Image (tube, rainbow, N blue to C red; front, side, top):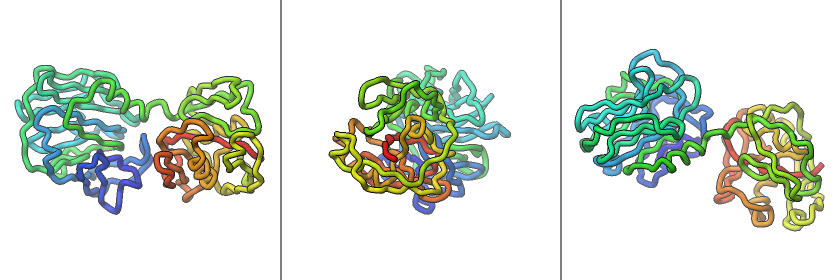
Length: 353
């Protein structure tokens, strides 16, 4: 599992997050904003992973990735490829394609993969049920007759190119490449798709806003205020004008999370914060609050049991890392990271003037 996130790339080493130690080497692919976090942009570049037993997918397997093709100037575009074993690529009218080296059979999706938009694509090879393709969580053709097992060999795995390092280059962006040594269920594939689908949103402010002196805002796609006067569903990408104050007095002690009182600490958010590229950049302002600073967010993690349920995921702060990135706190462990401002994370807003 190669996320391509910044925290999972060290120099040219692309970490494998599956625990199998299949780290890759990046050969020229460039970092860019992705669908789930950071992606890699391929243009005759590639990531290579040396052979291991866990990559010898002899029987059932699943390969999935978020992809954003930017050109179909050739005929074949490798997504993931192990020569003389298995290969997943785009071919023949921009359709997903799998080639079974065991029986010499090509299999195709029913639909084409569009250019310049993110699509979640999945290739399944089953020793009993043949080939299946999924696009954006939906079954999209295959070949039930292609059931022969894939051969086993010592060849490396390539992401984004053929084994000759010249031909069949993928042109575009890839994010969150995964390989499984089993057949994923339709529900599991849908869940992978849902991790990145429908997260960039616009917002129509409700008639009433948050009550003033409470911590506020559920994570994800529903806002529910703590005093119980309504749920408001986010339905598209947020695009509201307005600036943010650079100095705010905020609640950052356990007791004020219960009684709504301000604790008097003056916590200052950076006056250079640019919310233009935040995936949920104005939701807090829209409901009369603001994004917390990274210090406040860390305090929220420490006292998270008092503030309601948090997902085990990243939450944006208003503190910049640099002009293109901002800091966030991961609520699985409380660690502070940074990423591009357009990356999709949850938000939890605070009140205070």
